[in-house]
Amino acid sequence: MLAGEDASYLSGRYIEIKAYPLSFKEFFDFGGGSQALSIESALTEYERYGSFPAVVLAKEPAIKEAILAGLFDSVFTRDVVLRGRIRNQAAFARVSSFVLDNVGSETSANSIANVLKSSGHGVGSDTVDTYLDLMCRAFLTYRCERYDIRGKERLRTNGKYYVVDTGLRNQVLGADRGNRGHITENLVFLELLRRGYEVSVGVLPQAEIDFVAQSPAGRIYIQVSETILDPVVYAREMKAFSKLRDGYPRIIITKDREDLSYEGVRHLNLCDFLLGEELT
Image (cartoon, rainbow, N blue to C red; front, side):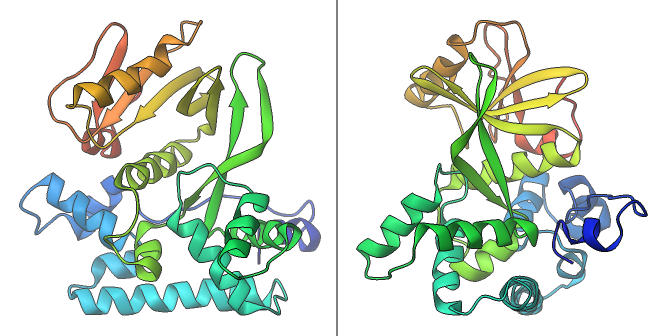
């Protein structure tokens, strides 16, 4: 069933338990890291092929890719095209490829429709919006809404989309395509969901916080970057934190091993975070 259908068929007689592909810690314990020379090389495997159990257990890259192709075809054809009654499969394929190619970038149905129109593919914004909703209901993607930190309200425009498994994305687009920083964001976003956080993009005047993670225990501000060893990148990432006016924890997550914590901002290594290190 697509998300939401359970309420129609099983109203009052079900409990929803959200499940995801294996976390990095589960992936490592499951066997994905058993032959790795280092945790970092296991992370490379995790990013490239994702973490569906059958994919992790497969030893040969060709088998992994064949399983991923079958998984994507199942979600794309059965869960979305057939159940969503999509007639123009070519248009949906273009929209889904665009979203997967732009994970972590602000986008909207209008902006996607305009990009496709400029390349000669006419798809209306209402149709694109339907496709985006179906992709989320099939758990292929997740929408991360924007949150006005000063105004304390959610913004319905220009959210970001993240894919449920980077292996599925790479199967469609290729492993070497896309913004590496946004792929890292994707891993952090899914890990925050696994830990039960409600996640938004933080909006400030002339600044943006990658993730505002909220739970009953409070709020955490998180920036994500591949590396902040470059002073220019370091300054850019820290500048957003300087716009905050409250005392909630501030964390930056990167692949850097050196501890780069500074003036109340805690630095976490990506692998350590994905392996279970707590945010607070």
